[in-house]
Image (tube, rainbow, N blue to C red; front, side):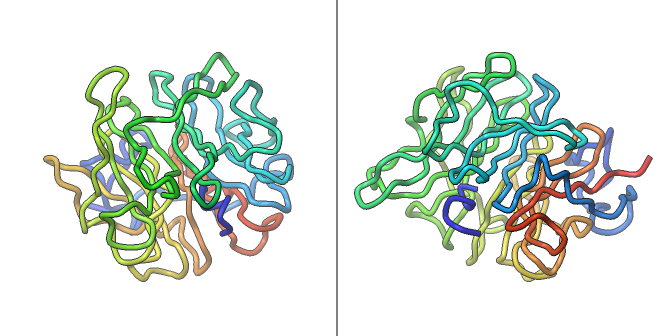
Length: 290
């Protein structure tokens, strides 16, 4: 994955959502899933597509595409049959805009590139959701650092808006890219970021986190072995402690599998460079069987 793309169970599934009482069956047993299907050519292109996110406020799937030469925010239906570039001021021609995440209450955070000391770097910005429009907000003060060249990207908001996890190479980590979290301290403020523990972060890279419930986090890692490249894992927060992550083998291949998100019906979308796609990273659907 190139730099702009990087901006890029005991587990029963209850009502199609991974929960703290359900952390195992996606890796062994549990719900059955159809074979992965690459989404349509309207969604995928010869460039990279990644960063899918469920927007329940508009009942659509947001994702990032680089088909125009820069990362831009697009949207599609749950079935992934058509796609359109998101309207509003968030997308800007010639500028990278990516990884918008929306809480169930309609709060949104995304990624924009800003000038650092030596290069342009991604950082987190607020996004105003106005119907189907996405508008550019302000950089999030809580995640800014004195080192202007720190990588800060790939945010996810918990459905209830109380937690935010993101990816960064800031000091205090244990590998290249690690997962960091902020807690909500007021309607307009986040706590200072804190590094997620060694049960989550390891010596390699941890990327593309997505909350699938208030206490369950899906992300990709190349730190734990697995089938090959990046694999997708799920970890559950129980009694304020993160449990050991488990691989979601129904999503994983010997290629790079990242950016997993669960749809309202329990199906999954994952970004992967596995063969059979349109090129680069593509979005694949793993549909849950009735």
